[in-house]
Length: 169
Image 1: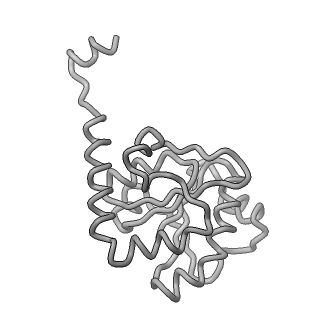
Image 2 (image 1 turned 45 degrees about the vertical axis):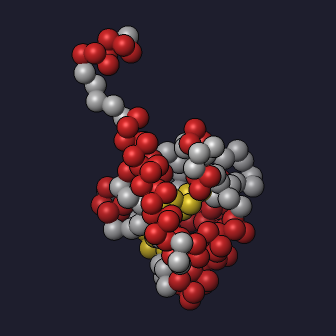
């Protein structure tokens, strides 16, 4: 599991604390490890200090490789308030959007929520249920749903041609 942290320190702190509550369950029940991907403009030391930690909890790691490399080595991303979830879907990752209790959640995929309810942010308390679905018997159906979302996103990223540029201008 890779947890994408946003540019907002308070949002990242909230998500890190919420994930830490479930980290034992993630490891023991699903055998999942946790990697954190900081926004490139956020210093890890500042973030750790804001959470009140000296270092990451045991078993956690920083995902320090370029984003594309991180996404190639995972198949599930947890986040809230970051546009990188679009990159994750385009690189064949499933995403779980967590609803913030402290500030507005910016869902960069909200235009697809009406058709793809799986993109709707969930309360952190529902994380174990959602992960059990993602890594259990529902996995093939969920992967198929994310493939449909990926196709919609790719179709929306039309190539720039003389004709499309003229239509835009």
